[in-house]
Amino acid sequence: MTGMLDGKVALITGASSGIGRGAALRLAKEGARVLLADMQDEEGESLRREIEQEGGIAAYAHCDVSQDEEVRQAVQTAVKRFGRLDTVLANAGINGVWAPIEELTPVEWDKTIAINLRGTFLTLHHAIPHLRSAGGGSILITSSVNGNRTFSSAGASAYSTSKAGQVAFMKMAALELGRYNIRVNAICPGAIHTNIGKSTTKRDTEEVEVKADIEMTDFLNEGQGEPQDVADVCLFLASDLSRHVSGVEIYVDGGASLLK
Ligand code: NAP
Image (cartoon, rainbow, N blue to C red; front, side, top):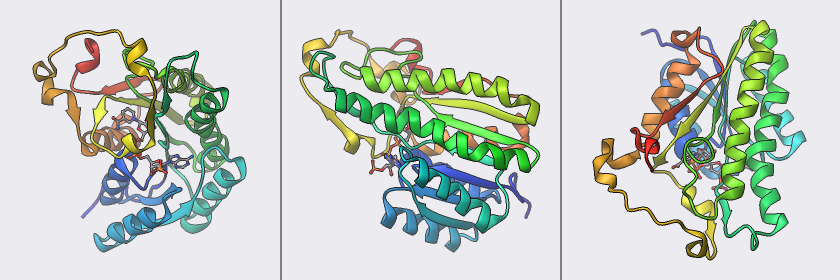
């Protein structure tokens, strides 16, 4: 059987859980060889085995995306292991601390920005030479509705800023890299059932909440998506079906961020 991504190699950060995990399974099923990068080694290795049991090809690398050398090494591992690099999903991220701006500490602010924004930069920075060597490729950045179409998550100022920054960075990169046949796009999920709640600390957010009474039941799928919903969009953007799509953010939220 032929897959949509036969012959291609994909690097996915934050691959051990949630959206990254869903994308890894989907891309591998379509023939991509996948380098799974994350800090959750046990879950990452278990995903690698799952992909291989289903007939796919994957490898796992421990990588903290905020650390230059670790990202460089993860990219090297992908290229050494599979010979090339065609697709990058810069996906690792945390919600971090959500708190009133006057309470949020500079250390808390820096951590969210370091993982979500610097991590995205480092991933592209190290991957681009290999995408160029491959003659082109597709870069996907997991941003969010937060910071781009919604500003209603009380206390999430660092998170939303990082997610808006990712979209600006995506557009700069799309323009810069088109000459190398590299496409760059962002995926902006709404509420997706994953483990991101584990990386969230909320402190006194009720003090800065602006209340709006919106019925989620009125939205498609009640505004709640699954990693699979995001994975399908990743597949489209990673494949040649999107060969003329670059520099765009795609909302995957059932339309909920139009209002909420
Ligand atoms: P998730 O289930 O927590 O998965 C994220 C994975 O990234 C986890 O394995 C996490 O490990 C890992 N990670 C965290 N920090 C890392 C680092 N410094 N280096 C490498 N890996 C790291 O969350 P998710 O919902 O799939 O999130 C993936 C992306 O989607 C994030 O960028 C997030 O902002 C975005 N997003 C999610 C939603 C949603 O509703 N779920 C909505 C919009 C956007 P730990 O368990 O150690 O944190």
